[in-house]
Amino acid sequence: MTDTRYDVLGIGNAIFDILGHVHEAALTDNGLEKGSMRLVTAEEALACDALLTEAVRISGGSAGNSIAGVASLGGRGAFIGKVATDTFGDAYASDMHRIGIEFSTPRLTDGTPTATSVILVTPDGERTMNTFLGASQHLTEGDIDTALVDASAITFLEGYLFDPAPAKAAFRTATERAAKVGRRAAVTLSDSFCIERHRADFMEWLSSGQVGIVLANTAEAKSLFETDDIELACKKLGDLVPLAAVTMGEKGVRVLDKGAATDVAAKPTKVVDLTGAGDLFAGGFLLGIARGIAPAAAAELGAIAAAEVISHVGARPQVDLNELAGAAGIALPAAA
Image (cartoon, rainbow, N blue to C red; front, side):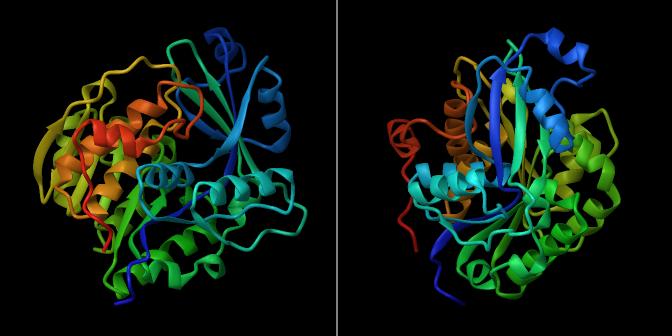
């Protein structure tokens, strides 16, 4: 097996986030479903941007945020995602390199802009995402650097990649490669509406044996199994894959290790913006698993990362997560 140079390789939509607070009325007046993610045109994204009086602009994307969390926790991260040769693309690459993440996916040069997501945050911290996929949806099998997969303990993919067909093919190429070289593949289900669009594909793929780790929230887990009973959904997920973590907001997370359930409490914090909570949980959890700590302890690491990111606007950590983990008494084993 190739030497392990990276703890986690993330593959996902490279998206530049535009975040700001709005009142509840802004959602109802514009027919937006609170807490959802919808795909929009470039024009619709601009219309949503116009609803914001003040905004934070920062690199995002689900898997990209997770890998930023890995880096902040002292882990070794790599990322595959497509940006364009434009200002947002330059900023995205600069952000990733600045925090020590390997990111060298070839840029898109056909004039399609870098993806953006306008995230409307209501007073309760809930986020409603309006995403223009732009260049990110042009990720293809040719962009999957198999050397990175070979060198990564875990290859982590975001479920949003199931929307564009070429990206879905890239998704499968990466997991097949990970399985071939004896590495672990993980996936986050991303969004209940994404699952509804691709439920059959998700179920077929998760049943294939190529995915060792699944991350979901309660809505996604229930949607996957078409049930309103979260206990049943968790049991079915635990029976389907070797390791899973279902986040339940302020109730914490349920870890399912070979079907055995363990509940881990959430870390108390003031909620300012829920954007990135699941992403940062994934980063901490997967880094813990990559370094060989017990799944419940890995979930605690994820909870620390999630608590930090929801305490401020923006989906990437603003403090050194490794220091927070150390203060909480969680010490990761050294990298292999």
